[in-house]
Length: 545
Image (spheres, rainbow, N blue to C red):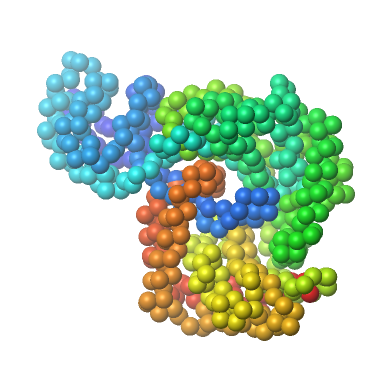
């Protein structure tokens, strides 16, 4: 999405009207009745996401708006970017020079002097606008573009010698038919096993042979292919990701071998009750719905998958308007666009017309499973807010207070620090496109299970019945803001987070906007969310003992 600067030109004056939102550069050019090469656009801000982990057990990102952005002036014709750096905006001569260049490009030389004279009248208002724009800036920028086939691009330029590039596809395990259970994850494994011009070894060696990394993961709602590499190999990486995405052939011999690998992956989860209980708890919560099924699938289903199964799933679920290419690295955006236009722009356009089956039939349940383990493992939780819900950011803060990553979370203090009942205790909030999930996990000795459960519900009741004081609320907000800011320092994670946000929201909010949303949360909103989600009557429980 771009913001076009509209101008009304009469014989003796030029008037600034404002911003209007349009979908792409072509629309901007058409709207302004000027040549595409002379169109100036303002790339929009976009929002980002934060993943709890990046293996095949990802359920959904914890946070969905962890980003920041700096607007740039972009001339499509010359691919030249006028960075809106603070030091340049302090210099009015620079602004005036940019305006003269704009006029030179837009209008005939016969009226050039008349327009230049008008700059005297525009100087005050434009300088005010420039200062306002400068004040909104931070050190990092996001640039966006949409290819003709619908694939969206988002880029953050850095000065690092290491680049990060990924393709995010809005298709995951919840999009499988019942007989396809595990197929999305199987495709993620098999996509590296050969293309029309490469064998599996050549795919792996293409990036890893120059010190880079090539990887992928599957969630309930996304499939992601991504790579980390030296920036000298941007084109090599873009070409390889395009090749494996659009030209994989999935040889039967390789598929047979990869099934054995996933069989072992499934076995490893069965041997880890602290991991397995997450999958089985989602099956309990979303009983009977596709989102309930675990990502890995079953051995029985895996044994039936063929090349035809893979191509059918890709045809039904891989749509170009549901793909985002996310980049973080030291490359000019114009140069990046040339690469991505060349390697991704020729893919046939395919738009999504079918929607996902919505979940709306939650019934709380309790289940106890006898297992031969040293510890009792317990999960309890409830459905929560989806990715578009206005209470989502409130739920993020509430979750962080209860059992977030900090050791001073309420559940960690109550179970581990004060009583030594648990080694691991955590709470998680996962927001999906149409629903959400809040859960608490802990492992403890069998004789402490009931007492630990009582303590967890006690913490729930405290948040439901007692408003946080001003000091407590302020500390909780500062903690979350600090965690978010620190998380943005990981550039490969940032590549994934901005890509996920752009995939979901088609925008990126500045980090300051996210912080403002957190700062605006009040104690009443927290109590409201707590009463909706932490009500014992609606809690489901799964226990291994």
